[in-house]
Amino acid sequence: MKTTLTPPTLRRTLAQTALLAALLIPAATHNATAQAQQPKPANPEVKQCLAPMQPVGTPRGILPGRVAWSHAPGAATWDGGEDYWFLDACNDQQACDWLVTQTLCTVSGKADAREAWQAIFEHFNRRQGQGTQGYAAGERIAIKVNNNNTYSHADSPEINASPQLVLALLKSLVEDAGVPQECITVAEPSRFITDYLYRKCKDRYPGVTFVDNQGGDGRVKATYKPDAMTYSRDNGPLARGIATAFTEAKYVINMALLKGHVGQGVTLCGKNWYGTMSIHADWRKNFHNNFNQSRDGQPKYITFVDFMGHRDLGGKTILWLIDALYGCKKVDGAPAPRWTLPPFNGQWPCSLLGSLDPVAIDMVGNDLLISQFPDMPDVNYSDMYLMEAAQANRPPSGTRYDPEGDGIPLPSLGVAEHWNNPTDKQYSGKGIELVYVKAPSLLPPQGR
Image (cartoon, rainbow, N blue to C red):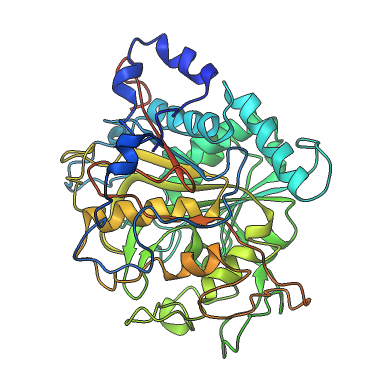
């Protein structure tokens, strides 16, 4: 992380709380002292493809390579008891609203959420060669949430998308960005939108559409554009249809979870795309071709890069988010355990990560997970898909990534870099810029 962690307008806003010095993690800069420091492995027990502070790829974003880390201690207070973790009694809605607003401001360098959304839309359209216009009325936005641990519309005790953070994102889209409710879709095409999440958001914003695998009970059943995905290598019977919630949207937001996953080590934004494909709600009936990294660290083709670069998925995404309100060591089960890694110190992470760089945000999520849980299953070389994505134009595996099959290979999809160690959490300054902001302790405890 850099010492120039927040733009001047944000610094002025935070200074009003007289807490600025306490909000920023000390960071290395390009001075003689920092250059003299020798980076230590992020975790010596975990093998990764990329050495610390050795960025590869091309940073993306309004502020290229920037990853926002917003932290609101106390936002999540579930005690692990019999009540569901996602109940309002355990989660502070106002703190979740702050997490979304602060993340938007940090990734854009703007002073408030309205300006942030305008800058984000303009940046996306400019990258697409569509001028500098912002959001236009009638344009559809699809939000991909991670509700992987669901089996019906009934609530599940396992970790899934945080209802309070999803509501906070909808609130900001509608009230700050000016997006009509009817133009927003919250989608989990491969699983289910459970009752608590649905009702909490639908009661506040009845015009928003909710799409899931089954439909009914107010949800819309997912439909798919067949053969929309052309994998860059033979992927056997892996699903090729993409949910029309995404193929018909103008913009997409990827809202993943911070957790481990058997097979791939981690599940973040890159893997979250799998839920947009024409797969079965029962994961046992699906194929997972080329999801896993090689166990010896040898470069290989990985499917996630095709998801990340496809024109209807990563190609339409204006914002990548990782819901870290709780986080989890395992892919399933209730949130567990609490995090000992500073600055969490035995509490839930109570955080939201955000970026305009799809590789950088997953690198930071990967660093957090392997630093906290170095004994996660299959964690070795969990950065392999990010090495491929960052260098998609010249990947280590030699794959010609072309997920549309149109003869146009992917460029670099972002920047990959590991921090120096779990204590300092410093990046080189040439790739990822991690910006940590802690919520003022003066936030009133409303919305519980």
